[in-house]
Length: 186
Image 1 (spheres, rainbow, N blue to C red):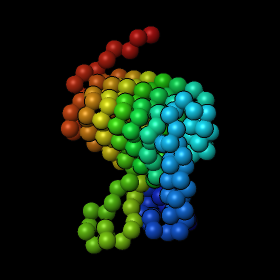
Image 2: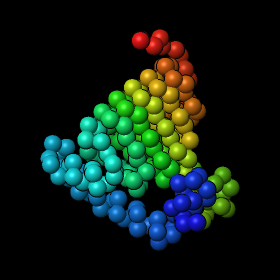
Image 3: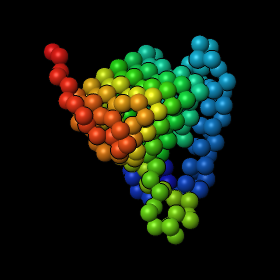
Image 4: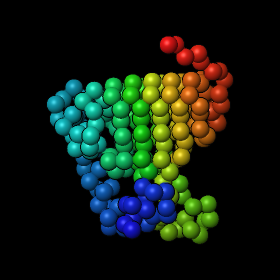
């Protein structure tokens, strides 16, 4: 099994492997090009399509943007990602249709070993993050590895999401906690 396969399946992966290092280099070169655009430039779109294969034409990522790989990001139709976001996509990051992500949102999938001796080796797990459809993620939110946020949720600005949030909820704080359940309009 390759180190990328291990990474994508939440197994301990060697991030110093040549295979993963080449992926980091590729993404960083594309990000340099992306972040040199205004977002209105045609080149912005072409670089996004190279960085994130299969990105829907209706999805927007506003530069500057940062990620580890790019191909671990899966976006639905009409997703909007504001500027200065960081998506560490060792594990898959999936964002449902019509979700809005505010500026400076950070989504992390890497999880380093808890044992300090194991952390001395360049290795980590990567746990996927899933955000449902029609969500609004407030600016400055941090979403931790392995979290799932259900459909139609609102996450208050500056929240730190450490655990799953069920659909139709408003969650705020550090750590984020549900403060209200929203009624679903039919």
